[in-house]
Structures are given as structure tokens and as C-alpha cells.
Length: 111
Image (cartoon, rainbow, N blue to C red; front, side):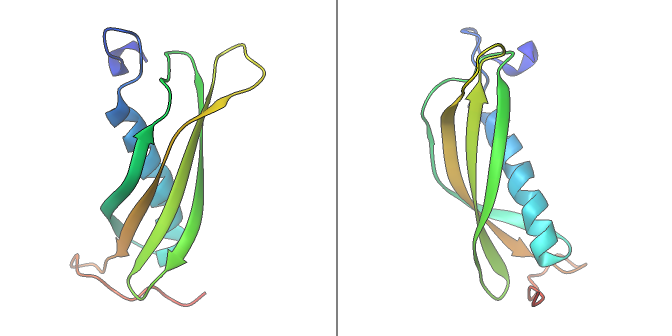
């Protein structure tokens, strides 16, 4: 939306990063079977701007699972509203830790 843009009409990178965190968090919750928290974001680069009206698609891929943490890679693609094809705009690795009810790290269940 226009409130999420800079004066040039490009979407704020922070808004896009929050969408990526939500996508990674959805996967982290399924893997951890409960609460988790973002502890790191690694390797993010903005490759091209996202404009108001672009369709933004996020793809989350589970890269690895440790005892209490997991690494989730998120790719983001944008397609202009009436275009037939899109282009990759950014990607990053999100590291999440599974948390218990007290907010302490807990083991991720075997699946």
C-alpha cells in the first residue's frame, strides 16, 4: 500500500523483510510444533525494487534442523500487476529457535 513506500514509490525494505519473517515463521511453527522466535537473518540483499501494485510471492524452504534451531531460506519474487512474468527481488536465511511456554529454548520434536 502507499503508506509502505518511500518517496520514489518503492516498497520499504523493512516491510518486505517483515513479510519474509512471517513466511519463515509459519514454517518454523510447523517444524517446531509450537512457538519459535527469529534469532538471525543472514545474507539479505535487495536485487530490484518492488513497486506499489506488484504481486509479491514468497517461497520458504527448510534448509536444516538442529536440536533447538532451524534455518529457513526465503525467496521473494515480484510481478508487475499486468505482467506475465516476475523477477526475484531478494532472498535470505532466517534462523529460528523453538521456545517453551517460558520463552526458553526447547528441543524440536522428531517428525
